[in-house]
Image (cartoon, rainbow, N blue to C red; front, top):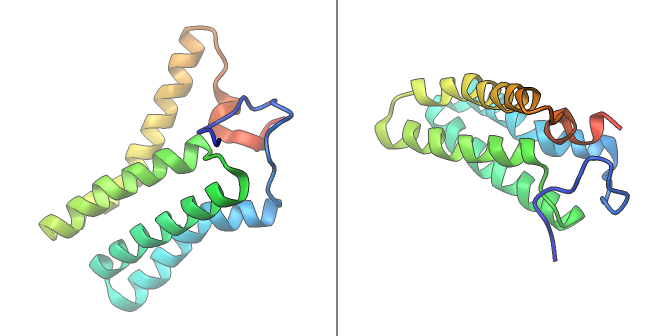
Length: 128
C-alpha cells in the first residue's frame, strides 16, 4: 500500500532518478508557460491542470507515494485553476505561486515555533 509521505530519512523511501524527479515536479509548469505563450492563459490553465494530474499519477506509479510539496501544489492548482476557468478571471491562477509559497512558509514557521524542523518534509530528498 502506498503512503502520502515517509519521513525524509526513512530508508524504505523509493528514490527517483533526480532528472526524472525534476521533470515530474517542474514539467507541468514548463507546459503551462509554453501553452500560455501559444494558446493564452485559459487554455494554458486547463493544460496545466491535466499536466499536474499526469505528473502526480506518474510519481505515484513510480514510487507508490506522493511528496508533500507537489501534492499541495497540485491541490492549489486544481482549486485556483478551476476558479480561473469557471469565472474566466486570470487573477486566480496568477495567485497560485504566492499562495503555495505562503503555505510552505507558514508550515516552516509553525514547525520552528513548536521545535520540530519540517524542512526535510517540505523539500523531500533535497536535504539528507
